[in-house]
Image: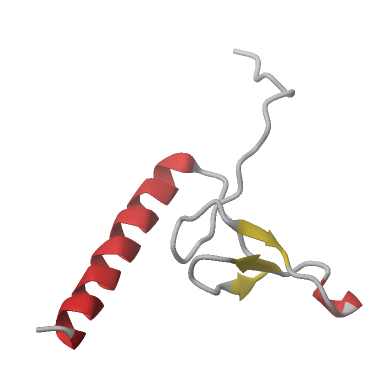
Length: 73
């Protein structure tokens, strides 16, 4: 089986699973740092595995809902 090399890879945030991740701008030292608009993650690691990101996203949303319910009983 040959992979189609023209497929665009999708980058996901490793903390929340969002696709709203982009290269952090600013200092030249940050050229390899990613930033997530949804959760504020900043780091060099990103995820490109959509199966793994499904689990990450579910866990993130579950934790977010739990935190909300603790603040607003």
